[in-house]
Figure (cartoon, rainbow, N blue to C red):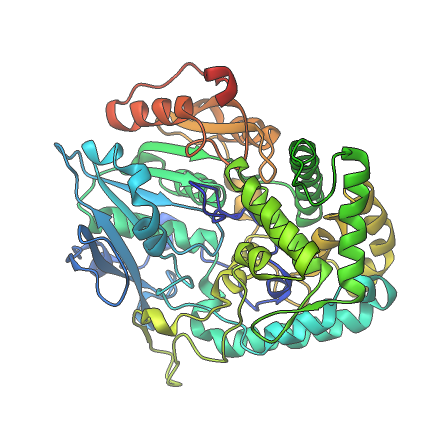
Length: 533
């Protein structure tokens, strides 16, 4: 999921973002190259970023924009290039270089997020130029899209019942959706995974003039940071991973963990809501839990119309609730939005959590047929509205080596559905769809699962939050063990997805490490914000 900072439901960790996220994207294996057969990349490593005022976007006056050029395919750097969008705030004090931020996803555009939420990182600007970027396939950096594939996937999955009743028909429709995604995404699609994105990070590091990469990654950004550390251990500077992703668990297990975590967060929200006389589910938490399920079932049976002409279903409500549960700061807004829906049929509040809207079919970068592709930056108005879920699916599938057959999916679906609905009567069916998301796609890389381990580099800080609904604390512990002695764990005993934006203690310890190089003892903790006060 994008990691959650401030009150914006942004950082998503590996979750399907509403029905549009069900669209599948065709992609090939990423490029993992050894020193022995390394092609000449000097022209990419020789470049420097030219900064200028950000154009075509509503950005603060002190935000600057730039770009770097990277190979489309690192194994064949002459076959084409991509331009990646960057943005920065200049250091306000003595700068020790650049600090790169990744806000999560996969599929989150860093430039627009830095423009909207840069104030949260101005403490780090005391010692760094604070930089973020749109990864390949995301935002202005050759954005992928599914075009009409979104509608194909939406029709295939609907409210989830057809997935269990006729899975083979659904798989056939999803293969058509995958073809549409490939058609509208252009040549970047086979090269969109985290292994290639981590190589892009190293080109950015050099173009920014830094000998070592200083990096702060949230949620999916922790996967990207871990892969970089494995690929370039001698280039790691001060590196922080907050809301730590799994490097090993298959999609079926990730989705089950996600459903369980979101159900716990929903139960906590209902307990909080029931104490308020205005709670749309009443003041009895047990009854309120049943009412949530009944409301979802009712909307799946009879969706309500929306201002944009579509219909709002129960699974759309599940998507909205899942985003709102990333932070307690959003709970009052969720309570009001659901009350508007229940009392007046007004969907505007709940839709604000989904970021709904679909893109028209388009190509992100055109191949002229001779194999030489030049992918320039897209204009803001040309970024497809489905880019986030399209990129999310593309990157997750490129990073995952498991490809169950149609027979395996059909055979196991009933058992999986029972397991998912047992851990969460609300999110189980919604998250079960993730089991299908890579069907019909080429096998993804096994590099992350097999080779990202025992990093021989400097100490890095991993932050895990006990009440995180998207990236459970045990993933922090497991990933730290895989990364080896370099990993130092900070235990945040709070709630919400990631700790930096919600815990002053976490922010203080992260900033102290990034600015001054002082790490907390491994295994040290931050109490909940309630305890801190």
